[in-house]
Image (cartoon, rainbow, N blue to C red; front, top):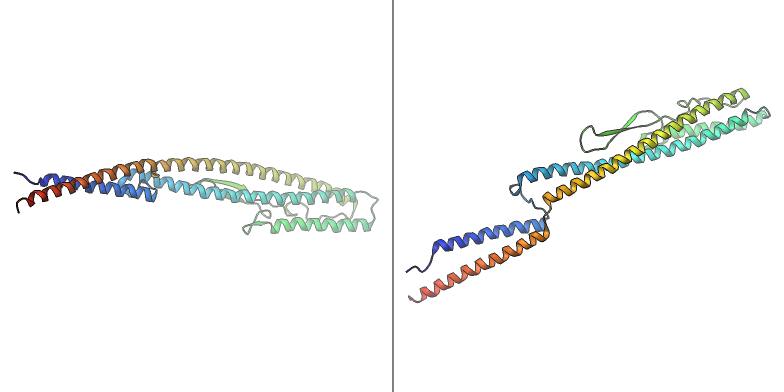
Length: 269
């Protein structure tokens, strides 16, 4: 007569342990919000996911870089507009001084205002900065990292609006001839500033387009990475409920079997 089947009991115990391991893994996914809590669960998926995460972080940083670049262009535009206003006022004074009805006092007053305008232009060129970098006092490329990988850059050019660069050094209105000459020089300077403004607008549009494209790329990568790493909470909860039911059933079965064996053995005492 066979009272206790040890092989069956061992099988049942093993099933309880496996189910407990499955419950633990499910709880890890639910508590951590991550399907791949360890590499052994999905080695290839983990590798792909980590690469995606690196790209996502890079794209996020690139968007901040581009926002800084846009801020530089906004400051540049504001500075150029200020210089433009000064040039137009200077041209108005030159047209006034080109008239032979002015007295020496009139010309001196106009010259004083013109000197102040030229000084304000040089102040803008020397002092307008972004993060301590001069943006209107020298011509050089300013590289903006617009992607998450090497060499993904967009160059925007700083400009030089000093009176020397604009051909307005030592501008004066002391004679009608000087005033006539200054009108032509200021016209060229205004044309120069207009081209700079057009370039700033073009760079701003290009950088804005890159910013929007990178934003969409980051969003797409985040969705793809989410499919790999983020658990389906409803599905995991259903699995947990199923595992708990199976676990309770197996435990009750083992307990009942052990009680029955003990009852039978009690008959021989």
